[in-house]
Image (cartoon, rainbow over all chains, first blue to last red; front, top):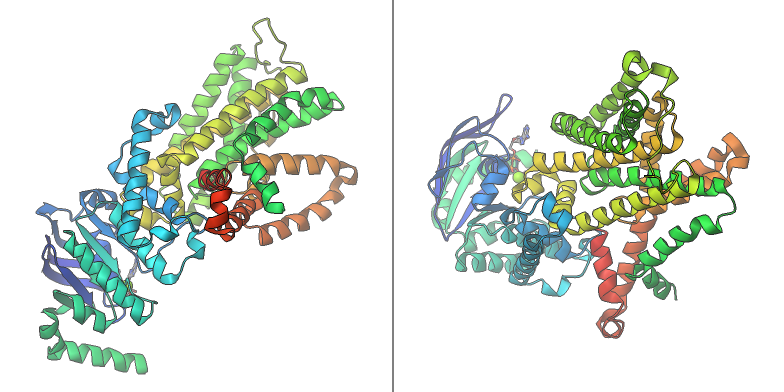
Length: 255
Length: 344
Ligand SMILES: Nc1ncnc2c1ncn2[C@@H]1O[C@H](COP(=O)(O)OP(=O)(O)OP(=O)(O)O)[C@@H](O)[C@H]1O
Ligand SMILES: [Mg+2]
């Protein structure tokens, strides 16, 4: 589904992602872990086309998307969430979600001017898609609330819904469970499993090990931009290099 | 109850009441001067609506807006005074020129983000001022342009009179608001708002940033040019000062006070401030002593302007009333939420 070959991204002299090759399979939950600053978010930025890689290749469903612009990549079916999501606080949840399906519509200025049939149909379609996504993440009941008035966990779900409204084939989730309590983390994990069940491929970055080990089919470990391990949760857990990297980074943090 | 009173403003009929008031205004005005002030305020409001597209909805602070207003004025002024064009072809040309220059400036400047964009457009605005002031062969320099044609009335009306001109401006204002209303509710308006919330998220939703930003920019300069051309047709004497940055700041102030990113905000802000300024005229320069602090307080306590804060408050209230009451007041609440959507 997603094949990465020798991907490298330099920021000045810093190799934020360094010669990473990996393959993520369809209909699986793939996880990326690693200490802070390991290059995880940068990896997502490269895949989604937000940053251009310095070298290497990215194949999505057999299509070379290495140098493709972000909005094109999204249209091909790569949805994503961010570590922090900026939404329109003084608008309702539903209002924030309607634009999610915009990339599948074609109405332009002329349609707006004459309020064309196409525009009306597409607006209806976007609204339905938004409701559908909202229902999927279990938030139909907050549809009419302002973003400013919903909880942290609900915000996370709204971010999911927004990505889902784009009709993606794969979703890249950047620390979806950061800042929510253990119980809610469990709920978000369930939601990811549900996504996979409906035919999506999930790729997530997470620091919460319990959750990752519980749901991931495959884990890639990054450290200082390099892939230091990959495999099933069991393989990764018992990998001495991984243990070393995590203990090392813990010491760094303590110092 | 205040909330009940508030729902009155959200009724769909409210706009027709306002329109009726605007139509009878020249009849109830005390003197011609008041009609004149109102017509000027309407012209500024059109310019403010333009800024609202690129800055309010799309989130890009354009400091060249006054410059495009001046371009509209000068295009109309020079074409009619120096080149003998009739008003209406010149009017159309002025609007098209503003749109075209908007395209050129937008395509370059929108590659820059946030404050870099703001600073770049500040420079563009200043360059426009310099051109108008220094390029004497074309613009007459500091002397300005005189003898600008008034709108041609086709023998039916005389637009050199204040009241007919007032109605002409009103027609354009209504058209301007009508289009913004349609735009902001449409998928395109939502696309602009998504860009305002953040480039990265918008891009990841498959939105072509450049195309949409440039489009918003062109729309905004078109509005500015339209307002400028109307202004030239009314005053019929213009100078490089039309491009003074102060005009841009005035426009921004009207927008902030009324409510950035809302439909009625630009009108509320412009009319409110123009009339308050008028009524404080006896204080002359000292009126800024009252006005300045008032503005600061407003921006601190109502960051979304009068209209934005009002809509937020109404929404909270309608949520508090709960589902039981909501059903009872079903006539009101859906329209309230719809309006909140509209003003999103
Ligand atoms: N746009 C950028 N310009 C320059 N350096 C960057 C940029 N983005 C990231 N970096 C650097 O690249 C490195 C990797 O950052 P990245 O955000 O990918 O880490 P991460 O693994 O997501 O960390 P975290 O767990 O804290 O989110 C860091 O050293 C960071 O400072
Ligand atoms: Mg990160």
